[in-house]
Length: 108
Image 1: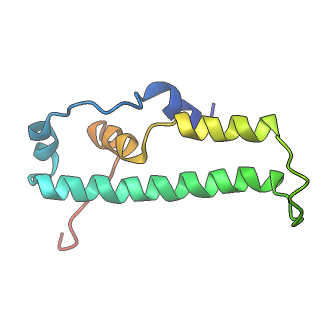
Image 2: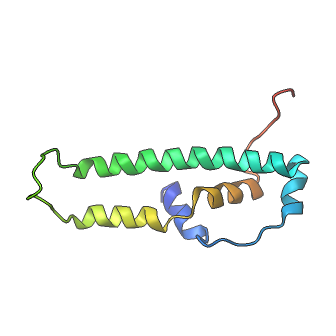
């Protein structure tokens, strides 16, 4: 099972309240915590976007006629899979809480 499929099944795509004090303890500063989570969310978003475009590239129709509109069920299923995935921010919060993100300050 790929990592994206694991993320779909294991993460709740709904927003939940978080213990900010516990998140702050890992970095010592809540703003630094938010910056780390935000950077990781951007990385996840770029990776997901590239992966989706790569998968949908197979279905691209390079003709300019509007008459040939095909409904491909496989393409629709791929799109629905990515729509059901948890938001990249929720994924990065989960990674941060499970100590799967390595972070350090520049001066250290």
